[in-house]
Image (cartoon, rainbow, N blue to C red; front, side, top):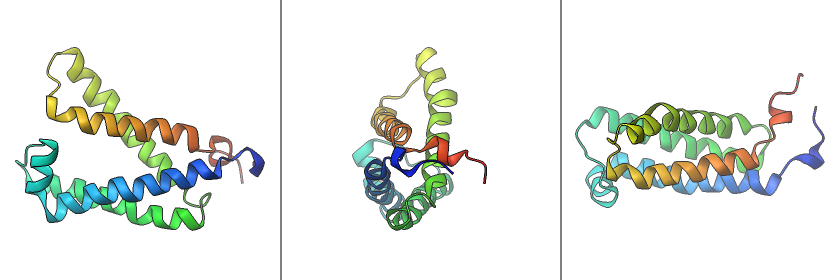
Amino acid sequence: MSNHSEIRFKWLRGMYIYTIVGAGSFGLGMLFAPGLISIIFGIPFKEPIVYGIAGSTFLAFAFVSIFGLYSPLKYVPVLFLQLCYKSAWFLFIVIPLIFTGQFPLYALVPAILFATYIIGDIIALPFKHLFAKN
């Protein structure tokens, strides 16, 4: 097991709070006020099923992050999963769209927000602890 003195507990808790507030608000908005989210962020509301899946996923991350406030190391995989899917979105969606000149303006705010989560998760995650052998 890794040395707990190397773990940034304040960063971990900060990322859990950021996820609760950010993903929770966005998830609730997508589920209960998709028209408002569409207006605020300019995200087209064309497919309610996909919008609902995304909203439910964001809300689930927020809900599980509440437990991370009380047991930060136990719930580190939640932040790692968040880092993985947001990084994958950048790598496989955002970057190709930018290079082909097809990146939609409405995706700028979510891209900036996702980038802040990626940076925060990289700083907060105790990778030695996460990948330590039991």
